[in-house]
Length: 109
Image 1 (cartoon, rainbow, N blue to C red):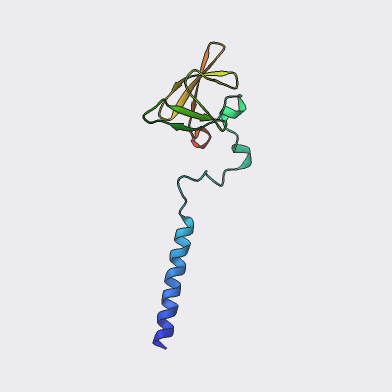
Image 2 (tube, helix red, strand yellow):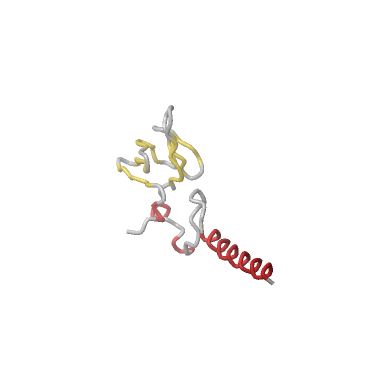
């Protein structure tokens, strides 16, 4: 009887632990649970490329926009990449400068 109670206690404890683990999300996975109407960022609505990643290291910095990597001075969908920061890039087109930030669609203002 004591073994049965011990086994039940262990099962109840581990089931609560498993529920807690399910709530944790890997920070490298894309955000989930965003309504479909909010999935398009303001950047996508005005035609700006979507910034997905910035890679900085010993060499020249790279920006991943719309699934492709670019260096300073390269053209991205008609925009010239003029600056790469730690969390944003600057694009220029027709004399106007546009700043695109990482996860801009996920930031609530």
